[in-house]
Amino acid sequence: MRHFLRVFDFSPLEIQYLLKRAQELKKHFKEGISHRPLTGQILALIFEKPSTRTRVSFEAAMHRLGGQTIFLSRGDLQLARGEPLKDTARVLSRYVHAIVVRTFGQEVLEELARYASVPIINGLSDKHHPCQALSDVLTVIEKKGGLEGLKIAWVGDGNNVAHSWMEAAARLGFEFVLACPQGYDPDPQILQEVQEQAPIPVKIVRDPIEAVRGADVINTDVWASMGQEDEAQERKKVFAPYQVNKELLAHAKPEAIVLHCLPAHRGEEITEEVLEGPQSVVWDQAENKMWLHLALLEWLLAK
Ligand code: CP
Ligand code: NVA
Image (cartoon, rainbow, N blue to C red; front, side, top):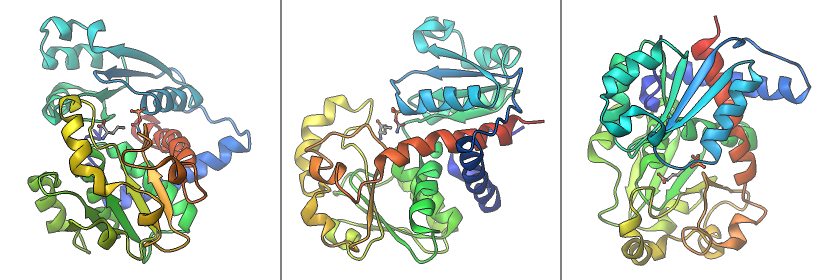
C-alpha cells in the first residue's frame, strides 16, 4: 500500500510508468475501449479548499475505472468539531479504498497517512501539488515528444505547484529554472532536498527574462494561492514584473508552449492574449489531469 503526498514519494521508474500508462489509458478510452478494474471500489475525497479540476477529474477518473466516489467538504465531517485526524483516518479506511485530500498543512496529510490503511493522495496542500506536476509533465511530453534537452521555466511564485515541479525535475532529470521575486523563493528545505537529488540543479533567478530565454516551456501560476488572500494586494505589486505576456514570451523559443495549472487570473500572472493564444496548452493540460489520475488510481488500487 502506497501513499502519494509529494512527487518524491515515487521513484523515477514509478513516475515514468505512470506517465506512460496515462498515455495508454487516454488512447484506449478515446478509442472507446472500456476498462473497469476498480469496480466495487470507493474513493473518498476530503476537500478543505475549493476545486474544479482536481475534484472533478479524480471523480471522473474513478467512475471511468468502474469505481465510485464520496465527496466530503470539511464541514461534512466530525473533523470540523475536533475529531482527531488519526481517528478519521482509521474509520474511513474501513469504508473506502483510497482518500484524496486537499488541505492546508502538509502535516495533515502526513498524519492521515500514518494512521490510514488505504492510500492517501495529496490533491493539493500549501507545500505540494504532486498530481498537478505529473499531469503537467505528461502534457509537456505529449507536446514536445519527450523531456530530453528541454529547458522548462517557471515564472512567478515559488509555491506548492513549483515545489512539485522542482521534485519532478529532480526525479526525471530536466532543466528547470524558476524566476521569482526576492522573498517568494521556494521552501528552503524542499529546495535543498531537490538539489541533493537533481542531476541538473534547479536554478533560482530574479530576472524573468533570464528564466525564459531559450525556454521550451513556460509555466506560471496565481500570485496569491488559496489561503493567501490577505496578501493578494501586496503580491500584485511585487509580482507585476513577473507577468507572462507577449513581451516576455518573445524571449523563449518561437515554438515554446505555455502552461498554467488554472484557475488563471487574466491580467495578473498571465495576459488574456497569451492564455488564449496559439502557444497556450492550458485546456489540454487541464484534461490531462484526468488521464494521470486514471493511471494513478489504477496503479494504487487495481488488484
Ligand atoms: N489546477 C487545479 O488544481 O485546479 P483546481 O483548484 O480547480 O482543482
Ligand atoms: N498555487 C495555487 C494552485 C491552485 C490549483 C493554490 O494553491 O491556490
